[in-house]
Amino acid sequence: MINTSEILQTVHMITQEKLDIRTITMGISLYACAHPDPKKLYDNIYDRITRQAEHLVKTGEDLEREFGIPIVNKRISVTPASLITAACGDPIVAARAMDAAAKETGVNYIGGYTALVQKGMTASDRALIASLPEALSTTERVCASVNVASTRAGIDMDAVRLCGQAVCDIAAATRDTDASGCMKLVVFANAVEDNPFMAGAFHGPGEGDCCINVGISGPGVVKRALEKEAKGQPFDVVAETIKKTAFKITRVGQLIAREASARLGVPFGIVDLSLAPTPAMGDSVAHILEEMGLEACGCHGTTAALALLNDAVKKGGVMASSHVGGLSGAFIPVSEDIGMIQAAARGALSLEKLEAMTCVCSVGLDMIAVPGSTPASTIAAIIADEAAIGMVNSKTTAVRIIPAPGKDVGDEVEFGGLFGRAPIMRVSPYSAEAFIARGGRIPAPLQSLKN
Image (cartoon, rainbow, N blue to C red; front, side, top):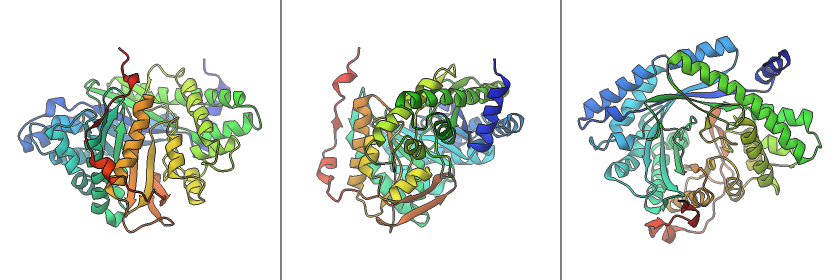
């Protein structure tokens, strides 16, 4: 039973502590769209998406008005494009159709320009990776991802090398906007099939025809709860406070997910528990960590604090929803979190410390700007390092990195909106060229043998 006090607490979370539903994402299968003729493929994809998602944006807006809960984004994810474009041979057709359908339906992003290459690449996969610079520089709303590793398969280092080069090529193709195209590409290890968050969302091969997945957000709510209930208290109290708060936040997400599902006539998929920050003051994961007693995010103790936060969010949230999935934890995107931006700008947060933090949180090295002169082999090596963390720890990790053309350490890139701004971070000057040039596959670890 929900009492008056709980209702008032939720209202306060929304009005004062920046609680929102970060995204309602409709996952749509495109398997029936495959066709060898490019025009027919385009028409099939466009028609399928626009018919299925015709009322998605309006439903989200109706729910906002009726429940008073901000729903920041309405999005679409689709079947990995390399699976649908194999017969046609031209993945750009899918990118164009996806972009046009996204504009027609009014969603802000559509994800699924994706290849799953953790164990090897087909001709269709290679074509999609090669097309990434064109696809992400000539479309507005298309997001892409490549899964290059898994605990069961190991790391496909040939794919890692191609992705490192693709990142640099995307940066060059969008140099007039500080390499903004790179914001729309995520390189994964152990990618999940029901992630509602961009840029890495896709509707996995194991999913049904259509579903609704919801991502929530509430770093400000968690920080305020710690200020009020756990000031100077032992970590047991900190963890318990976060768990209780995560439960309340997730109940809001569950409510919206159920309502959206019912009104759209589409099965409810999952609620993603991830704490997704924004560049706005009072909406930062980094500030939660600092509330635990750190002088600055990135100092010694940060990884331990983040581990506590991530675990407590999961424990609290999992009891509040019938279906939890996606990434579910705490995001640490540098440019999208005001506390991370501040910590990086003052030198407290380094690329190496961020890598250590990714061992205990959701996703990985996210929205990090590096010098535009960074070689493709170094980008690939950063991807490989992060993929190794995911592979060995049986968790999802990812890299979304932005080599900003003409920028160096001490400079900053400005993207605006939810993408925020990012100080250019230092990378190691030492080369990994010979390491990346080896190619082949890094074998799966022993823990993959679970059968």
